[in-house]
Length: 396
Image (cartoon, rainbow, N blue to C red; front, side, top):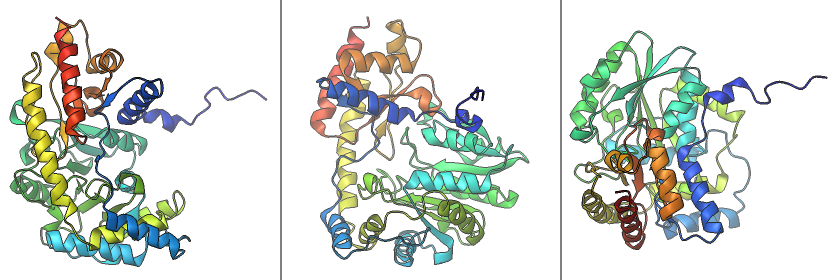
């Protein structure tokens, strides 16, 4: 029997390894070799999960809540998601319009698999979170990228999106605040974009992963617009808001038919989200919310240190993020001065020569930048930025 020429299925070639995960793995490898690495690559809060949430998980274990649950999550956690979203945004979803997933990334994957047919177009603003492009490609869709202007803080407008809409457009994905730029789509622009897409029957997918981490405005959901349910898809997660990245709980709020389609898919892939994690997330959503503003204030403190510090480095410019916890500096002048051609080459040398891990801009659709996560201690930020300045200084 002749072995297959290609070991893996063709569709696997449509997706790439997560650049963020790769950088984290490279940094971890150096760390195991004894290198003192400063890691700015992970989009992960450095805070611990609040005690009341941890206790809810421990209690679930002690009470033997360790069996299968419904594939799309328990009725209790769905109600907690719906109640929290209603309290914050005035929405009114039913349990049949809610699904619980294994993290926020999972609900985004489910949305694209349930909705995108080969050839369908999905509009994605640039810079974009790494996973959007790959999950659309995997579904057989076509990514249509909307460039934003760095000089304008990467801010998106409805008009910019509208220019890219065609009869093949199926979904517009909005991540506000944005990973990696920290840009925020103004509420009025979000509403304008909703009216454009709704009129054309296009789905507007709002990724609300960082919606609680805004520095100059209040959290907003386009799903709060009356009558928006038929075309608005909400993707949310407990990961960032409650420092629960490893617990892996995400959720979707969408029309019942779409939720049912995603539930079918989930029943044959992950089955249910972890029972214990569901109990912990119920406490996160229903319990005290004090930890959220506390984290936001600490992120603000770090942002107000990091951005001016980056701007002091010759050859580096950086827009001011309005939300999330990332800086997205332009380092082209610096890496070109050092004879480098790409952010990937810059990031690779920075890790090897200065032991600082950043994510290259190619992962997010730009050729001039690197992403720095400031979801780490001030001590690490000071050490890492000193190293970056010294590294760039040696480039000439």
